Length: 510
Ligand SMILES: [Zn+2]
Ligand SMILES: [Zn+2]
Image (cartoon, rainbow, N blue to C red; front, side, top):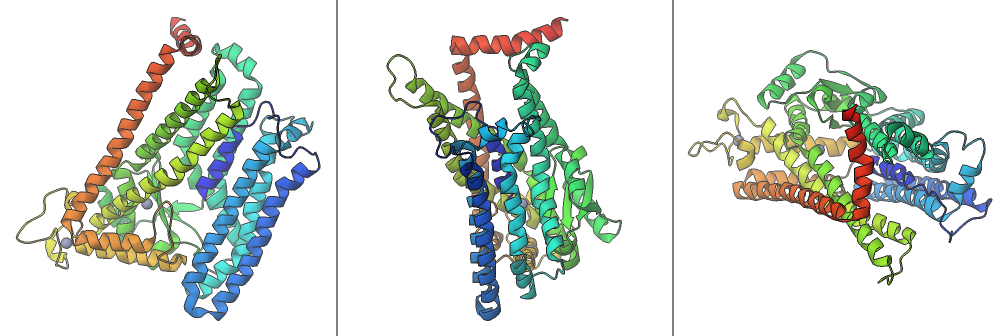
């Protein structure tokens, strides 16, 4: 969900400076009609799906999971369709130009861009409004005991799904539009032709680093009160050497069982546990879920994801540069326009993220699961372990890095129990596939299998090491190739000297 909203905003950064010549739709009346027709249709379909699912939930009580499963799939397809609508409006209709020509909209840089996104954002909110009855019916079927009204449900989703990404990204869109439209001013005052890009990059970096603070206030959170649970989690932090700014309770009015970790740096890092998670799980299970979040930090998953983003950017720019070279010059091999090359570039991002990112993310989730199980395994005395256990074997005592050699069967059991509760209470059918996390059933099976099989555990650790090494190598090779290539193109080299080195030299020369 968050990723789809990020993609919607990211598309705005390709805001066409000069509209492409062959538009699919350029009529001043039909352009806005199309832009609004997509979300309106999707919301209407969402209403029909909701009605049908509610009926199924009432009449076919033996098929509750299947009904919910297909409901979630259908609503996510509707969201995808709305996202595709943004893409078509932006790249294939005259909407962007029409918005730029409106005197009262174009008065503020960035406002036309945000207006283009408006139908999508309204569509998302309206879709939450129409699907609420199913969320309620699934809870009536015994999944999660929330009494939220429809309005509260929409507000909750707007805060948690939408605003958390939309607020920082809106700021970036405004910064982008302002720097692009006042390019000459920035270039003159900073002294580098790349000043707008540098300013935009720094704005994005600052927002990314500060995002945990933003999150603390956009989501309704409070510090976890002192007591046995807090003591226990704090001593776990000490044991695994994890530094966080605070442990927060995430108030969801009983709407979700979830935990999250936010922040690259310890000074701005929070671990969040939802209110219902704390209420419905025992302390062992909470500790294991907390351990899962800690595992993401311990295994440096966020920096590796950033590396993935860098590598995919390098690959796509490489492909686009190659196509541009082959389509230019005196006798071009192909005759591709600039727009076609851009579309191919964006098209290449889809398999990279859709397939590769999802695959890596699912492996990282499993590694965090293993870490969570390890945090929940008996650490003071192995007598607490409900044997048989691969690592608490009295004949073969474990070494220090227990999570490297396998999973304790007791720890695994605790975490599997926590996962079962997460699935049941959130109303997620355990077999429902998840692109970023993989299905809960498969995670439970994986952990159970690992706890009885140290060789499998070793093989898995090796696989993760290989993924991380590949990411590192891809980034390093990509950067070296890019640097050498740029340096060998006289035009690019002059650009870099003029735009980067000279301004920096002037800065230090003064
Ligand atoms: Zn996770
Ligand atoms: Zn054990």
